[in-house]
Length: 109
Picture (cartoon, rainbow, N blue to C red):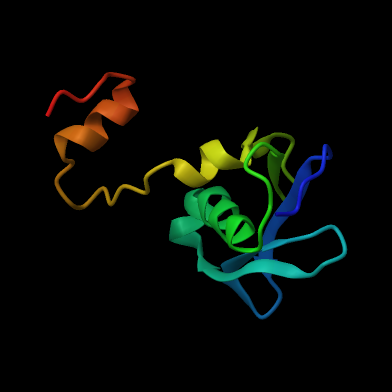
Protein backbone atom coordinates (compact mmCIF):
# COMPACT_ATOMS: atom_id res chain seq x y z
CA UNK A 1 0.00 0.00 0.00
CA UNK A 2 1.34 3.44 -0.90
CA UNK A 3 0.86 5.53 2.24
CA UNK A 4 1.70 9.17 2.73
CA UNK A 5 0.35 12.28 4.37
CA UNK A 6 0.47 14.31 1.18
CA UNK A 7 -2.60 14.84 -0.96
CA UNK A 8 -2.98 13.15 -4.34
CA UNK A 9 -3.43 15.91 -6.91
CA UNK A 10 -4.70 15.20 -10.42
CA UNK A 11 -5.60 17.56 -13.23
CA UNK A 12 -8.33 16.81 -15.76
CA UNK A 13 -7.67 18.22 -19.21
CA UNK A 14 -8.75 17.71 -22.81
CA UNK A 15 -6.96 14.91 -24.62
CA UNK A 16 -4.39 16.42 -27.04
CA UNK A 17 -5.67 14.34 -29.99
CA UNK A 18 -9.39 14.94 -29.55
CA UNK A 19 -11.17 17.83 -27.79
CA UNK A 20 -14.21 15.62 -27.03
CA UNK A 21 -12.09 13.26 -24.89
CA UNK A 22 -10.58 14.00 -21.50
CA UNK A 23 -7.79 12.55 -19.36
CA UNK A 24 -6.69 12.75 -15.72
CA UNK A 25 -2.98 13.49 -15.38
CA UNK A 26 -0.34 13.79 -12.68
CA UNK A 27 1.50 17.09 -12.37
CA UNK A 28 4.30 15.73 -14.59
CA UNK A 29 1.83 14.95 -17.39
CA UNK A 30 1.63 11.16 -17.01
CA UNK A 31 -1.92 9.93 -17.61
CA UNK A 32 -3.89 8.00 -14.99
CA UNK A 33 -7.25 7.88 -16.81
CA UNK A 34 -7.41 8.64 -20.51
CA UNK A 35 -9.89 8.73 -23.41
CA UNK A 36 -12.94 9.55 -21.30
CA UNK A 37 -15.79 11.08 -23.36
CA UNK A 38 -16.95 14.57 -22.40
CA UNK A 39 -20.41 13.29 -21.47
CA UNK A 40 -18.80 11.24 -18.66
CA UNK A 41 -16.57 14.04 -17.39
CA UNK A 42 -18.39 14.23 -14.05
CA UNK A 43 -17.39 10.58 -13.38
CA UNK A 44 -13.66 11.30 -13.74
CA UNK A 45 -12.91 11.72 -9.98
CA UNK A 46 -14.61 8.41 -9.18
CA UNK A 47 -12.86 6.51 -11.96
CA UNK A 48 -9.50 8.03 -11.02
CA UNK A 49 -10.02 7.08 -7.36
CA UNK A 50 -10.70 3.47 -8.27
CA UNK A 51 -7.62 3.41 -10.49
CA UNK A 52 -5.50 4.76 -7.61
CA UNK A 53 -6.78 1.99 -5.34
CA UNK A 54 -5.77 -0.55 -7.99
CA UNK A 55 -2.25 0.93 -7.78
CA UNK A 56 -2.21 0.47 -3.99
CA UNK A 57 -2.78 3.99 -2.63
CA UNK A 58 -4.00 4.38 0.95
CA UNK A 59 -7.75 4.91 1.44
CA UNK A 60 -7.20 7.77 3.89
CA UNK A 61 -5.21 10.02 1.55
CA UNK A 62 -6.88 13.19 0.33
CA UNK A 63 -7.76 13.16 -3.38
CA UNK A 64 -7.87 16.51 -5.17
CA UNK A 65 -9.08 16.51 -8.78
CA UNK A 66 -8.94 19.81 -10.67
CA UNK A 67 -10.35 20.69 -14.07
CA UNK A 68 -7.71 22.42 -16.18
CA UNK A 69 -8.35 26.18 -16.21
CA UNK A 70 -11.16 26.08 -13.61
CA UNK A 71 -11.17 28.03 -10.34
CA UNK A 72 -12.80 25.24 -8.31
CA UNK A 73 -11.84 21.62 -7.63
CA UNK A 74 -13.96 18.87 -9.18
CA UNK A 75 -13.39 16.75 -6.08
CA UNK A 76 -11.66 17.14 -2.72
CA UNK A 77 -12.29 14.16 -0.45
CA UNK A 78 -10.64 11.10 1.08
CA UNK A 79 -9.70 8.55 -1.57
CA UNK A 80 -11.71 5.77 0.06
CA UNK A 81 -14.91 7.83 0.14
CA UNK A 82 -14.59 8.81 -3.51
CA UNK A 83 -13.82 5.26 -4.66
CA UNK A 84 -16.76 3.83 -2.67
CA UNK A 85 -19.34 6.15 -4.22
CA UNK A 86 -21.68 4.14 -6.47
CA UNK A 87 -21.79 5.13 -10.12
CA UNK A 88 -25.46 5.46 -11.01
CA UNK A 89 -26.72 5.14 -14.55
CA UNK A 90 -29.39 7.84 -14.76
CA UNK A 91 -31.06 6.06 -17.68
CA UNK A 92 -31.76 2.98 -15.53
CA UNK A 93 -34.30 2.82 -12.71
CA UNK A 94 -32.71 3.72 -9.37
CA UNK A 95 -33.04 0.91 -6.85
CA UNK A 96 -34.08 1.67 -3.26
CA UNK A 97 -30.62 0.98 -1.80
CA UNK A 98 -28.92 3.43 -4.15
CA UNK A 99 -31.64 6.03 -3.64
CA UNK A 100 -31.01 5.88 0.14
CA UNK A 101 -27.28 6.52 -0.35
CA UNK A 102 -28.00 9.75 -2.19
CA UNK A 103 -30.63 10.88 0.30
CA UNK A 104 -28.42 10.07 3.29
CA UNK A 105 -30.95 7.58 4.65
CA UNK A 106 -30.50 4.04 5.92
CA UNK A 107 -31.72 1.26 3.63
CA UNK A 108 -34.10 -1.05 5.47
CA UNK A 109 -34.51 -3.58 2.63
